[in-house]
Image (tube, rainbow, N blue to C red; front, side):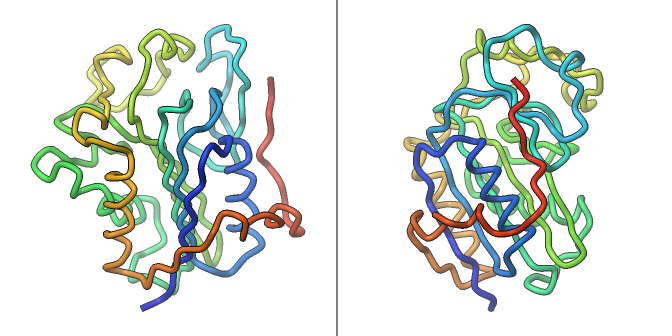
Length: 229
């Protein structure tokens, strides 16, 4: 099996994490998995997102990531899982649906009877706990997931109802559409341990310290992640 390098980030801002991811997908040739929790509060939108359609007036920083996908509000109760993989490392056709389905296997063990992939979301018992976005290059792909350990319905009011919604949402407001992983697991480490265990069925998992990524973003590469406000 191929090796995947695992890094557990702690209290790393989502802006810094996205900068690291962009450097790894564009300027590195190894397989990676990044786990993170404890980000500062921020709104993150896809590269083609339009703030006036997606965001209510807010004092939060707005980050435009290098990948596509929807708009999310993140904070210290958000968990992040990112997989960066060479096309040759897995028997997975490098197209969005196939990549989504493969990554979904990382979360099936959280609640096997209730887990499902609903359009482009990860759900438990019909409620969304995870959104994702992808970035695919000639030889590599990246899939990053934003997972709700907990959320504050008041904070979610910073996001407008999106103009395009998945059918399974059925027009539900944020607080009725989303669910909390803390209602299914005792600790965030259970989530991350489940991911690592699942990765082990496809890779040799090599865990390395966060300090290994210290100079990653200084590599020469195109940069698209920005803070807009």
